Length: 412
Image 1: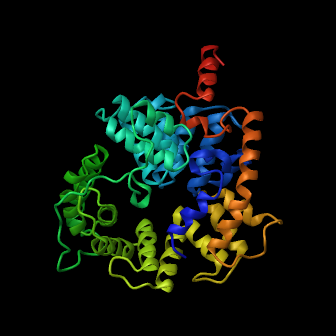
Image 2 (image 1 turned 30 degrees about the vertical axis):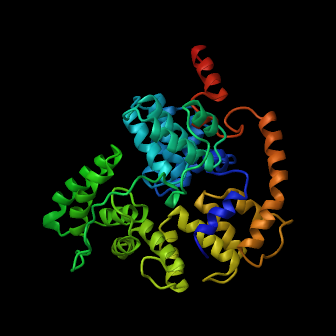
């Protein structure tokens, strides 16, 4: 299955990730605390939710932040967005706009519209970054294109055009490519950093991360390149992303495939997913190869990479590279935490037993859209707290936060 068709399927559902991140935790209870230390990112996220809202446990924003961080550090996008809010507001952690920006940016890379709005406000107001209204406008456009209802108004408030910018690659606001290039080495780097170079490689990696987080992608490129040449899989994977997106360097799918391939060979789950997508599309000079693509998706999904779990679940639904198996499809999609609406639709007894292809499924989802919108509107009018429309947790000025500030002022 083409990975970009997943985005089209998601667009047919009412709730994107920015519009119900906590919905997957609605039925969670204190029993999940007994799962021990080997918890999935989604479980850590839901434990954070329990502590944040006092659902079955004493409300403890410090404990909530700890669990959100555990999920965020494993790459779980909703947790990254939530952790940004905690740092912006000083909830259970010391207020730190730099850290808020860092986590918002990570969530935006994962396609989170609510985080894009909050990061845009950081750029608009100069919180944690240099004030940059043009960058704020890019982020608001991105958020508007990905379903955030507040983004269009924010964009208009700073005089931005409602017309979307050119479609970004991988759901990331695209920057103007730099002219500088870094050649593919004639001899591949080692499979892993040799022990004698590990300290130097770690220093280079940390320096590159700091440059990327300070919005200096061009300056980060030579540092990443040096680190990748030592065999550091994190740097190799990041170079793949940079070349694929044209961020800090001229876009080059051949170079992206090269660096993703090296990182994937070392077991980097995100690179396995990205390389699988390139095999599906025949990009970067790679042949179209459904078997290789599926094998890479399975490796990535087995390591808990959410996008790979979603892609593989969709593959099981349509029998693309794997046998048709709706039960496996539903389990993987739910495990990903990215498309609960799709899993719910597939699990419904009213849903047809099978669909001919993605287009047929998309048409079915579209037929449900009006009913979903009506039901969601009724729910938002009747419910209170963070379940109204876009999660109030992500909107600094929402009614949810106004109510919390009022409660805190009363000592509740």
